[in-house]
Length: 498
Image (cartoon, rainbow, N blue to C red):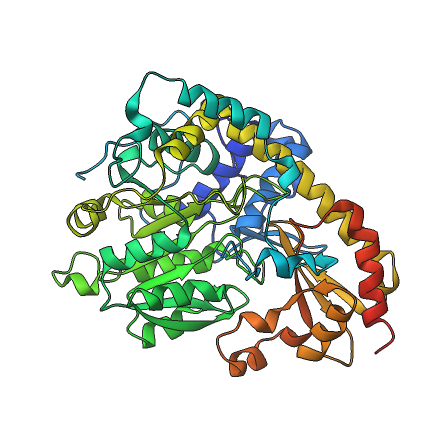
């Protein structure tokens, strides 16, 4: 029977400490692949804790792929293969940040005039603008402008203002368990700019793999910066390593914790396979053979069940051979016009960054950086995220309830609605593709199909889901008051045809 010493949990909640201990036991081989775990009640009785505590730990382990469940049979250990990094992963919040080494928006949205013609725009990825903390933000701006300090007008170093990088470093440690010193964080004016900088650092001679289906602007931005970009098909677990190995790829771009547009979470077994791939040529003299993973964690803040999942960057860092470049943005948490993103570089790339991109000036205005740093102090940013998370959860629930309680209930199936700001709506209808979008457009509904995000029609045809009958529903920009009427319009467009 599994046992752990709760006296060593420090400030961690019981369930989170138990989750960490079981995960480490799986990694270390204490449990065999497909071994049956104790039932929740049995383990709770053995450890002297509540069943609810065990259930919370098990649910998180299943979400991340360390365990899997079979109805009426119980919980079992996932076979994560032989590619597990050597070190175990501890979740202690007291760990210090290690010393540093040397130094779309998702869907295509169109312009404002185009958006105004739609009654409901489910392509739109804008935030709920009325929820932006205008009052608090304006006070911060006034405070900065009244400071007897010329920093707001001074030239900024390439990586961005130190104050903001320190706040991001602290936030990442608390929220994502990413231990990144401020020297490893690079501030950028948007994710597209970040991709261009990474191509500059890693080199244009490489082949960059992107997920297929996926956010197509990523591939466009990589190509426009001179990179060779190759779409790689996905299976139910994510981008396929077997295809990557055949293509001489040396950089992979992935969104493992909430893929756009499918919404899938990459199980830990596939994440370990990607990390194993990234380390295969580690240490060789030929720099062109170095392999890297770009992890886009674009909406990690909006996970509605369980704690945030562990990033590839954290897994790679814990192995002692970090091959993952982490990217995130404030566009989803604050506003699309808030063009501040950031990169977390492995220490081994800091010298390349200094050599190849060190002559750039940071393109984000100092005033914006200073305001964001001030906003992140005292965890004001995290309070805002919690408020927005609750707001979006209610919006999502209202929309799903309206769909499931109306005429669409019998011809629709909703998938991947527990994380991020979109879900998939698959329709049982005789029409598909452009005709389906056209009928919705006639009723003032703008929506994209899953098939719109494939690189090539052949790939969409081979996808196991009905990609040309599956709508990608982005709900962050829709007014709650319009939800009932919007669903009625969808019913009018779709229910007469079967």
